[in-house]
Image (tube, rainbow, N blue to C red; front, side):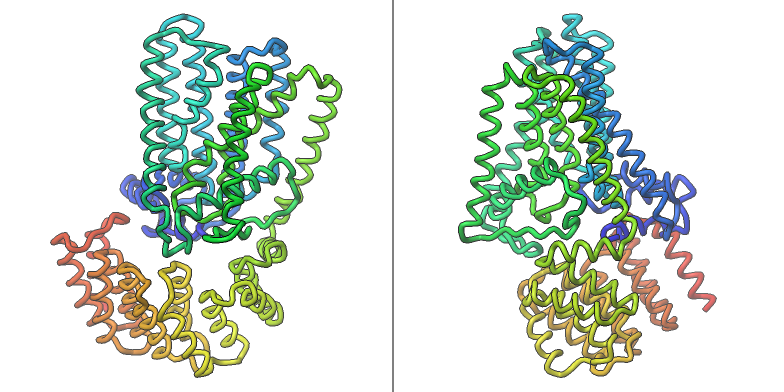
Length: 603
């Protein structure tokens, strides 16, 4: 679903990933973050080495990684509890308490969307390696604390923590916040379990304090420099987003503390208003978390697990839930920060105010309830049409939820349902161009056709539309599938007019404009105009500087049996690639160019 396809499609770029060269090409094909996330991509080869592939294996492996993360949570909690040195924390009781709390975390239904949404294995792996890195760090700390110096075992624990940290970063970059997490843990343990080694202190300064200052400084600088700059793709500024996250973090916390069988899932609506009272509620949200951190710090002698539990939850969100212009709300962002909330019920387990029998009753009841909710939510995830419909019903203000439900209904031949949710999408987003573009499909599929008035209004809207990947995606599908419709008013020339209108918008960027040239080329091929297609393809390919775009254009021409034009363009792309004007990293392009040349020669 959703982001699974673009991330997993490279599995099929080479037929199958069955050699070292193809393995290197695949793990280097990532685009989801600055690192490309090669460790996470490599993990998908455990399930398939080609694409398309059956989803069951991917989901099964993700669930197994979730269970393995639970093992890391247990080891981390046990090691942390050992260093906090609670008076009532006998070894046997500590192990049982950590086991029960880990079970609460593992069976929480909030993690279903992370475990069963295949591409979020990236989030699972970063948390898995992150929590094992913290376990290694605590192991090194314990060894230095007990021996009084930085011995060989401490070196081994430290190296292990470093390796896990690097693996986590190359799974997903949110784990870069780990040094700040270690700093919080050091503050939490300093008075109860001090380390007197100078080497250790120097290591903490060099590997923890300095990286934390640099990372936090970067976030502050990015927030200050772009506070009022509106991101064209998202429609909100960094300042708006930061304030909105103050509300959203409390929403996350509520969903975790008060679990429900169903939520809005991937389509949970969230907004970042630039004016009004709601905007400043976000500031109250951040102040509320700050107040909690201060209060739990003052209570740290009596309840030492509350401060790290709350503080690490907030710290774990600092990369994805502050100044980087990502989407506002996603459940999977809580997967790593949510680990630290387990410290709060762990504190309850060692409270003198709660009897042991009450704790046993609470633990059993909580595990049974969470397991039941987990089963209900996982069962819904097993039925994708029912899942999307459920999200649409629970999030009536989510345009994406209404559109996705309408699409599924149309694909299954349920015209009335398609129209119903299309109408709901129009109510939720009357000015959203994705709704208008989907209206083209609905009208054509149900025999209504495209009126001149509708087409002109759509052109006018596109001419002033913002730079949006969603709009571009709908236009791409129109280009690819428009000819399949026997639809009155939907000619290739009309689609070309919409593409040019969007290209003429002053709010689109150069990259989007060049992608529109590529779509214009494909549309011209469909319209039987190969020479015009060549003009558009050249503008798009050289504008993008992408050899991959060139190969796709050649394939498009060849598939339409415009072999002469395909040969001409292939030679131009080959020369430009050899000269460095066109670049790409996904595949061995020299091999692919030779293969295409041989195919065209035989044609």
